[in-house]
Length: 502
Image 1: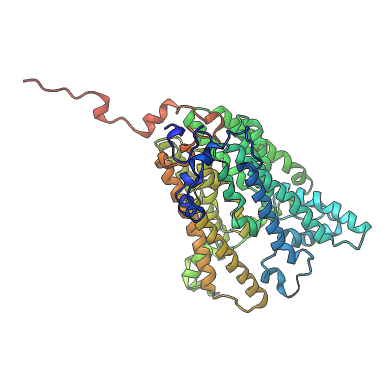
Image 2: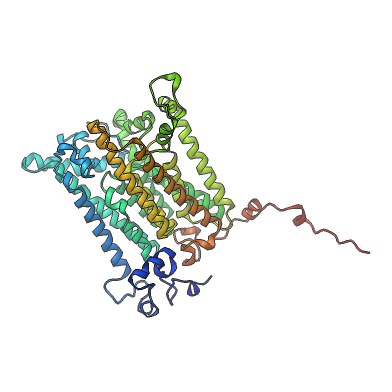
């Protein structure tokens, strides 16, 4: 299909216009006069030759800055650290960044891992120390400053810069579809959770890793994904789709280079803390091993539906039994995630056309969240860049974001109720919000799978000939064995059937 004949692509075949190509945007555009007209399209310039200041790229970057500014305002009631009368819950402004400045001993000058165990992977711990220890040193010299507030604002500035950099990466990967990045820039989840934790550190590094892969630099991609995995583990899951797609395209060497450098990066970053302070370094893994069912997960919903939550071992429902037998819960959670990854691999190999990297990456990370026993409020950020790259369609995206906002409100109600011992909502309201969030992510997965099976419905492939994120995979033919494995030759195809003669 040529891009010149595709609805929503300009005359030069370079830029997608959502008011024409996206059914949802086309429908709501009627409020402001309808889809973009031919004359407006004619004024567009190919990437790199714009003549107007407010180009799509600059508008999206400005919107990202505006969203992050709104997030900073939303968190401002908590910045002084006083948190009287549960203000962190009533104003929805709680953030681990400020709380852990004190809980991790940074306000006392404690060096992460050396002086205090840290509950996060090492690069996040190093990051906390790199910003927190200078703030403590300044506070020692000037007791009048609020160290916690300085620490939060410094983190907010760096994490916001990483969010802007992530949008810039999306724009670089989608030069013909710059408005796709507006999904990330305007996401309500970004407004609400950008600095709840340090997740944007891993997201920014992972985004640059995907960019390096797309630019056919597998070694650099591996290093960046490894660093991202040393901050939060989930970016390492992207290496699986890279390997599977490389198998299908017979480009295994590049995938092995990326995997090898990623492993090397993870080991080198972890080694100093693991060797010098093994017990403090192991705190993250210990917590993940011993942690029970957390709020808002599939397992939490199951506990509620059991109707048998109690302390009587003879009367435990299956999910409550799992909560009391955490090793079994861990095994089941990992097994379900492993089966989901196996399913994604089979899908990737048997699909009529090789899937795009972002599609498989989204499915794998979403599967991890769906089956995990922990699904913190800010984990929504993990999926944001992946869903933008995998399925840049506004309708289902906004439905998912609405579900996330509902969960966010219900979650803070649950926190306030736990803090005051007076429930804000009935427990069923929180479970319903958790179920809606889970269902929204599952629906997005179904849509992505559908577009993998029917690539003609893929919005990105309506603009690009193959996979703009694929790097060495982009435009590569399938390995010869794929067709034989995907569509086994039938007896009738092996030899022609002789036609009887009279």
